[in-house]
Length: 298
Image 1 (cartoon, rainbow, N blue to C red):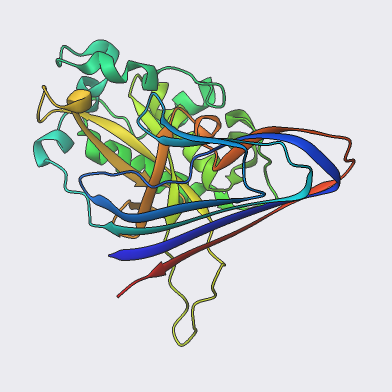
Image 2: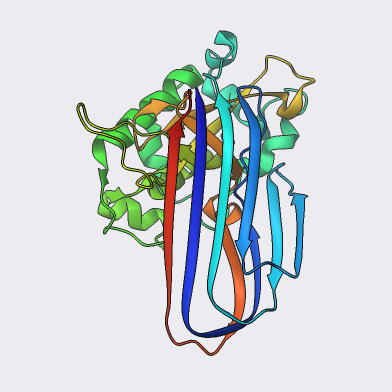
């Protein structure tokens, strides 16, 4: 599948911003199943300082500073991406989940993913998450089956509700309310898996949506999306991360396929927000609007 992805974030302030520092995670990753044919990032006002870098997890980051006084900041990325369905080794999916714990396995290179089996700032390994996951992580169960079952249960037992949580909600809040959005369900899944010693990462990107039958696409109605990838040891112990990563989407109850555009990954949302930064201003009020469009091409 080929897509043109546009992501526009606009900030408006009621007083001048005299200095603005920002970091953007907007460039899709190059992956065995994903190719970036074109990418452009425009920032208005034009930054006086701007540079690209690659972070610890291999994500492309764009740093910028704007010293021109402004009451509006517009950041827009446009990407042309080709995505195929990831292919997983059946033997890796069949490994008992207990043998996929990087801190308790002798697989060469497992040390490279151990940080993703530990708590992170927005993903505490709370007792409730461990107990919830235990019904899926049965003794000796193949990791592919266990993780898929956990995904099914979260989708079935938690309600998608934009009003139930905020960006500061914790894993315990999500367990208590049994509701949230994609970011919350990803954080909950991470807590469930990591509390049993599995390595899992938060994945940020986009999901191409389809209009109802007989309806046309609504341009700009898409949104950023989040899902989870869990580490599978093997099949190549000498390769990157000594294995593969099974990507699952508890929000939509499916493995990530060729409708998913991967942008960045990390320990949790805090590692890879689309845009974050600091401003210097005396403004009392500000607004942020986001428009995302994932359009099939060809």
